[in-house]
Image 1 (cartoon, helix red, strand yellow):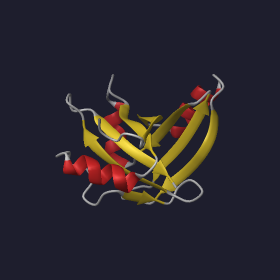
Image 2 (cartoon, helix red, strand yellow):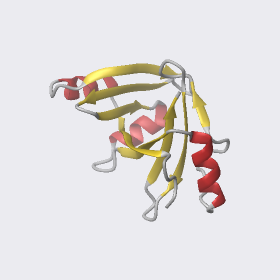
Image 3 (cartoon, helix red, strand yellow):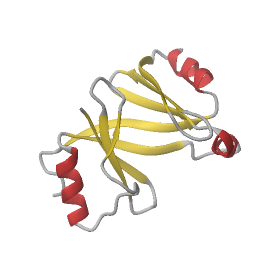
Length: 139
């Protein structure tokens, strides 16, 4: 079994949105609370993130900039970008999965993001139907 004693379960579901404030307010009316709100520098505009939580379920709302935001707005379905699974040791997970032939979608993996208190590291692979599965460790 892969990632034995390393995989802890679902960390979050990530969803692309065109208006972060509107989406955040939508989920807050159901009781979701913002755990983290962040902007990551990017071109042509920063990527805006909000992590909302309710009863152990975390949603990551992602607002991209420019042409990507327009493309996302034209979709009828397919706004969920990836399923993130929590691991205890991201480097160990990366080593194990790449040794089994899985390829990370990121050029340099695991990727460090300076979000949460001490940052987070992640990498993403494709599942059998083309879905993205992220393995993530909040540091």
